[in-house]
Each structure stands twice: as structure tokens, then as C-alpha cells.
Image (cartoon, rainbow, N blue to C red; front, top):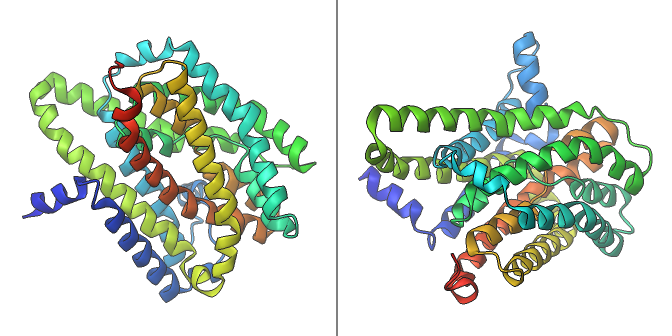
Length: 350
């Protein structure tokens, strides 16, 4: 009976229903506990304070830690399913690397700035939050979206690894260029890389190495069903957590969400479609085009939130927290779009 339910989770046509239900559950939890009224500890700071013995165990703070748990549940199966000998092949992909670098660092921050000027000129705090959100490419969830759309997982990991290094150098430069003098700890980027990318990567490598060596490839192939299930459950759990964090605010100030949803939705759709079609035009196969598309589209909301909390006022931080509430459902829609266009655009390409 449980397996039948898991099989329904794997049915991509039913996924939108599960996503909507997860969002509603999150909003109800957020409204019930009034979580937006509490000062929340960012996940990385929360983990540090647990080790230092200074963590405040409250319902809102525990729910914040759910972000880390949910992202691990999403990332770990994607990492475990990758044959890591393919990483070397993916690293030798100059066209893919150049496409992502160009769109991530020459286009995306300035495109988000343009959208902020068009839609949020009269809302300075939301304007700043939106620009912050556009500064850095994602270093975690794009691997999951690539995985869900049957893209090139090893290439996605290589692209994320390169982005994580470039970010540490360029984020302060872009922050000063687009927002003026901004002071924050750049090592928060490194901490995010370790937490959201490094730990799932190590766990996935060890699982695959142990599973194939001890039980064989056939056993690991059977395990794949449960790994895929964990990834989808992790995605739905993350949605519940994210919407719980701002559930009461969504109900009290829905127009605040709308103000940010319009430019963000335009950003994600336009960026993904342009990069995806660029990959198609340049002769990439579907798997590579999807990996490139998501890596040049997803934004690093963990970094945006961390900078907003440490360098700006609560309203700016609020804008960055709302960001993933919009990004995750839109990126899932883009997964659907990619899968629907695969055979029309990439038929015959390997």
C-alpha cells in the first residue's frame, strides 16, 4: 500500500497536486503559530548555536532547521544516483561552462536589476531584496531540478562547484556595484557550499560506493526507486517548511507576495527559456541543455537571505525570504516545460 502511494508521488502529472497541498499545509502551520512574528535564526547560524549550546529551541526555530533537512533529502538521492566517473567527462564541457558563466555573471544580476527598476521603483526595501536575490547563482536546488527533469546530473554538479567558487569572489563586487556599500561576511558563501552541497555529495558518494561494491549494481538499481521517492518527499517537505515560515504573512499581506512574484516569475521563465534554447541552438543534447538552463536560472536564496539579515533591515530580509516561495513552484513548472519540449526540440540528439 505504501509503495502504491510512493508510485503516485512519482507520477509527474500528480506532482502539482502534491505541491499545492504542501503549500497549503505550510500556510496553515505558519498561520497557526504566527511564525512571522518571531525573530528566526538563519539555518547556518542555528547549527553553529546548537554546537555552542546557545540555540533557542522554539517551534519557529525548529521549523527553520527543516530547510536544511529538506534540502538534504532532496540533494542526497540526486548525488547517490550519479556515477561519479562521469564527473570527469562533465568537466570537459567548455561550451556548457561558457554558456552558464556568461548568463550567470554577465546577464542575470543586471536582468534582475532591470526588473526591480521596472516593478519595484517605489518600494526601496523590496527593490533591494530583489536585486540581492539576483546576485548569486544557486548552489543546491538546481541539481534537484536537473535531476527531476532527467538532465545531466554530473554536469550540474560541476557547474554548481564552479559557481560556488566564483561567487565568493564576485558577490562582494556585484553587491557594491548594484547596491552601493554592503558589508557582510563572505565566508557565509563557503559555509553554504559545505552545508548544502558538500554534505549531500559525500553522503551520496559513500552510498553509491558501498551499495555497488557490497550489493552490486542490480541491488542499487532497486534502491533507486526509494532514493527518488526521498527526493520528492524532501521537495514537498521543503515547501511545507518554507511556506510555514511566512504562512501568516501570505494571508495578511498577499499583495506583498504579488509585488515580488511578477518580476521573479518573469526572471525565471525568461532566463530558463533563453538559456535552454541557446543550448539547443548551439547543438547541445537535451540533458546538457536542461542542466545549463537550470544552472543559469536558479538563484542562491540562502546567500541572499544571509546578506539581507546581516547587512539590511527586516523588510529587505523579508523580500529575500519570500523569494524561494516563488522560485520553487516556478522552477517545478519549468521542469514540466522542459520534459514537454524534450522530444520536439532534441529528437535524434544524444
